[in-house]
Length: 242
Image (tube, rainbow, N blue to C red; front, side, top):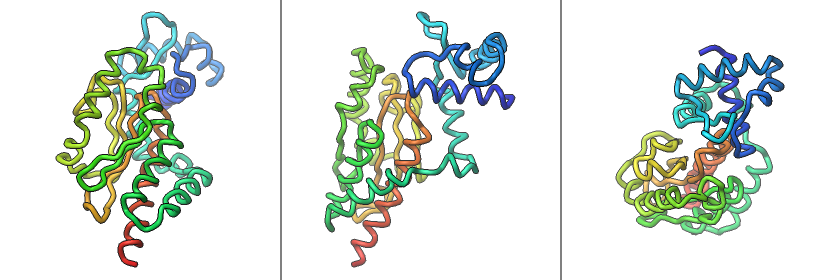
């Protein structure tokens, strides 16, 4: 893939996350300083490779799960520190809320989830011992992707089964991203699960993360979830040793 094609794919992903409507060639032509015909040619290649698709009712394009996967892999492997940066305001918001909840591990974990809910506008979740704490279901179903009943039902099935799946999966990576059809449960839900592993008094394989539509700002959400997992591990270790 050429650098320009990759840049166009990533621009489609990022713009679609912002506006929730298919991205057209005219918008991209202005962004890249080339003709609309050139953009359409590059988009045709991306579509042939299965990285973007064209909704029947629109001239624009949207990313596919495969396109999102390429983008997420790039973010994960990137050495660009700007991509990995998290805003100081977000850091302070999470830390203040976590430290304000005293010395009980369950309260600290719930506070971290609540912070992620506010900062990502997704559903937040975490394992606390043998239980799963969730908050932000209203956020999740407020996204336009979930106007259709079939997606809502698929998300509901995913949420019904996510606790036992997390318990059995023992995810190995510090940050795990399951995009759309990659989800082992609820693969037709049109949602993505981003989960960070952390050590807690309950388990060396505790998890915190968010569930949102596949159309989301992966760079921001991945950084927030990863940072929150690291913060939780640090705070809980300090509390446990004090």
